[in-house]
Image (cartoon, rainbow, N blue to C red):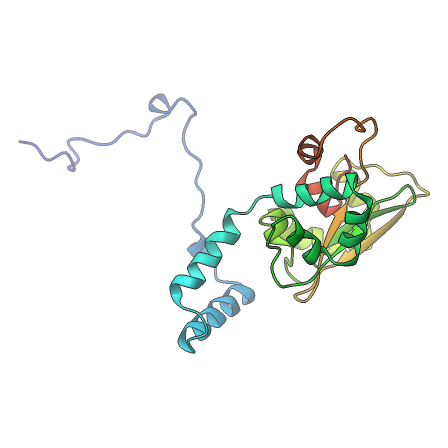
Length: 218
């Protein structure tokens, strides 16, 4: 019997075998050196395990929890704030406590809400890395972590927003909020017009991740 792993039986990867054409090359993460923050994160994780603060299983479970998050929880908070003025007041005072009222665990890092109005539009950035309310709105998109966004949105926010398709009136004030390791931000977008008859679940479906970062409107 011939060996299927010898050159007599090559595995073809020609375009004819793949209806989508040849698969493009994508470098492995290991092809690039670790960044300073990746090295620090690994070192802190190893130290916490070594000191018995957490177990490897607990650390892995938390990472898996964070990776599984989507913007859905943040959308629920926004929708409730739109229909309940008292709840919105509590969100503007303390996002973490307000989220817990809905059975949402926002984590222990303080999150501050900023509200878009007829006069002010808010946008969020982390100029140092990618600090972000992950338990509320999921993992940050790649562009949020990019050096271009982190540097430019502070200097030329109106131009950057236009690149996201968001053109704002010249008289509308744009406020850029810089997240840190100790404080995260959440934008409350303006409620879309003609949604008075919608229920919370319908309203939550209108909210997007990018609107809660502030690079788009609804």
